[in-house]
Length: 148
Image 1 (tube, rainbow, N blue to C red):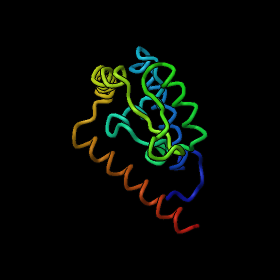
Image 2 (cartoon, rainbow, N blue to C red):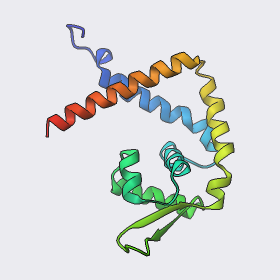
Image 3 (cartoon, rainbow, N blue to C red):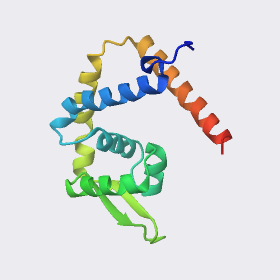
Image 4 (cartoon, one colour):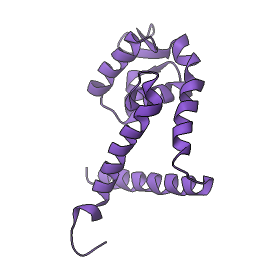
């Protein structure tokens, strides 16, 4: 770590800045589908596991129920998903993709992948970046858990 504390030397600032840039970066490929980045990652999660609870999505995406509920309402209003009470347990709300949500998966993924290709990462560079980011997440999770 550097001895002098400067903004640009702070890992938290650099990650925050990268997050801002990614949000802007994803606007272009998602614009034609009228999706935000957070709506996109919600759909990604549902493409992996359809018919999950709001609580599952909240934990998977790291979003509070207060943030997720209005987002899901907007996706439902736009025709991407349905939200229905679980017949086995009325307290639970199950989220399912609609046919639109299923049909648009490939075009959305292709649009996003085309944009990601412009980053010019080799497969090895991409894997290294993912490994570094995931390692940092695990370190932060362990540290946060030990501080409780």
